[in-house]
Length: 112
Length: 114
Image (cartoon, each protein chain N blue to C red):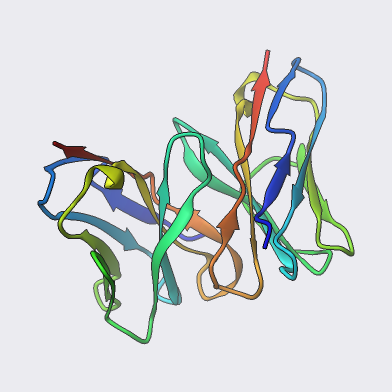
């Protein structure tokens, strides 16, 4: 069974640009959640989707958004990038509530 | 969202000794308590989890204990080995008892000294 796949692995963007990250969950998993990991703030929850609906959202500005498609693949978008958005963005999938969340390897975003 | 505090931030132990990492949480509705291990360049990997209806769970050298009254849970690693060196995170459900998404502790860098 293939794991969680995140693309791209690395990205370099300029301040003010926008970026879209992609996550393909494990086959059969309908829940996808996103996290931002930085040395200073650690792992922080962004949002969670289940069957194309956002069920939960963390404390991030509206520049951070996401969506989920009918095949459970998910994308997150960050608009008007700031230097502080540089981070490792992780996606996790699970099949039901409060069960094991499987993480991808992440997308390393650098904003210059 | 939920709050979770994790201690210590760094833990150095001799190979073969035991390591204990503790987390406290604030929402009494939390009912799921996973522990993750993250190695350099990789995403977090679940190593053990426990639900609120049990007080302890063990898997070979790893165990987790839960005290719901005091709202804390701990990870215990016995007979530590060099491959146990990594960053460990505790987590609780972001919204307490429902929906998905996790709130993570700040992490513990575990160093196994040869």
